[in-house]
Image (cartoon, rainbow, N blue to C red; front, side, top):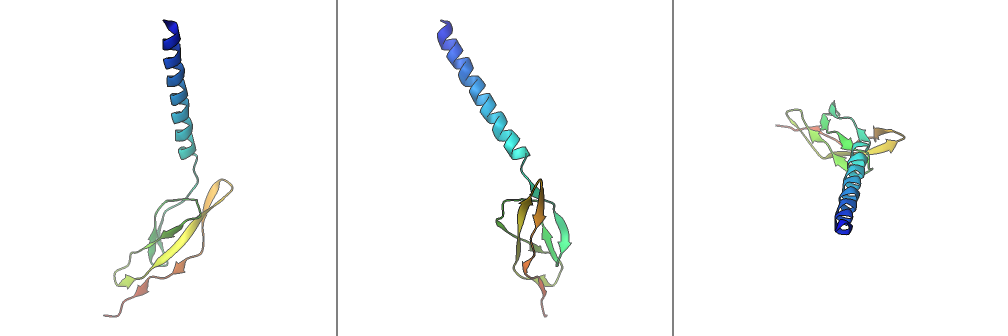
Length: 91
């Protein structure tokens, strides 16, 4: 009688621990801080995983393709230099 209950409890404990560890890993991820305006673009909070991130041209009359990466350096995230630009549009 107790054998099947013990197995269920062990399975529950294992799932709980696994979910806790996944949650902890997600919380301990390193991010680059958001930037409201750099090079006429907005940069959202981004995980420091080295993947290219596109900025959003924010000033009226500006357009372009602009990107950079967020790289982990110890326990902080650092933005790389910007590639591309948000340029003024001629009307």
